[in-house]
Image (cartoon, rainbow, N blue to C red; front, top):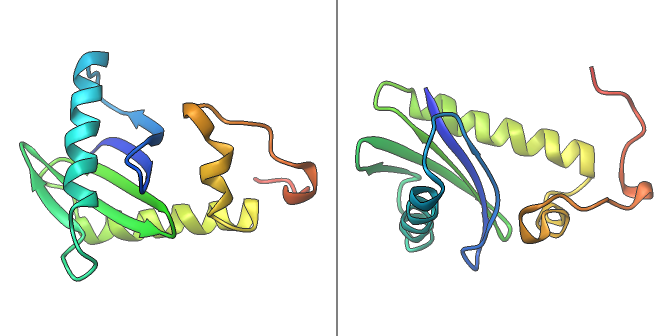
Length: 124
């Protein structure tokens, strides 16, 4: 089961966070800081799966953006790794490039994208 989903830039700033279990706001800040530090300190040659406390972290880097998913011990790491990639492909299709997502999510809130860059095709 997914516990949380984070999008973080290379400077360690959280751009998007979604929690699927209740976590106090004070504990979220500490958790995000530790999780981000764990992921950003790893080299490209190291595995994208990290055992962290009582759950696992699965992350992928796309340009200046890290996407981190925290899951319980029974979750399939490769399935979540592929889920992250599929999520980025959807963002890429919708926004035409993933890199501007960092710009759309300034200060933790979504900003209005330029109309020309957003597809007018309805999503079903």
